[in-house]
Image (tube, rainbow, N blue to C red; front, side, top):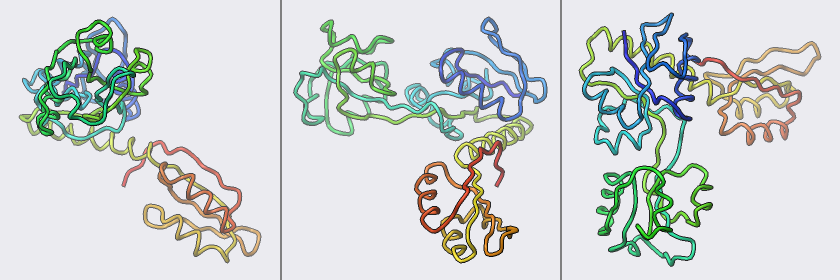
Length: 283
């Protein structure tokens, strides 16, 4: 049985549990439970503090973990990373008071900076030849400038609203992060096989999330142009319609390209465009 550690609460926890469920793995979850066992896959889920997950996986207490890449790198275990999962994206950024003068990273020379990520920030500043005084604190980093603890902060940013609410402005992006799957490097052959099965399911779910299934009607005269816009996985599926001179075209479109391609399809004569979600996508 694989033991998978995830954050016990918060957005990353919710996203991780949703991914596991979309992989067809069933389990009971309750806020008071610190672990639960899947009913249809050899998997036990442990609910832990996110900062503890890399160490637990490194030591073999847990076989796998889902954790923010920022937490993994700050803990000093980047080699545990198996693959990025594409959700819970954020950035670690430097911010200064809105009224402060800031032109470049050199302005932080000798400045006091409050952060919960001294390893990542220290490496970033060293690479740029900047020596600053780092004050490591946990939680409420944004308050540091207003109480005189530091002249700048480095903290996780999603929308930036927390910075604005505390009179700060973002000036440098230090690190970009997302949820990652991590694994102990000494898994048994049996557990490696289970990990491959789990990865196969996760990749099918993630691939489906990134793509849409599209169905449309198009005049035969425009078919070559439509096929150029909709290459599909191998090629689009084309079916003649009852109305002579028209065909139905079915294909897969990447979410990032969808709106651009749709406008181009309409321009070449496509009609009745339907877009459907994909539950799983196996290449």
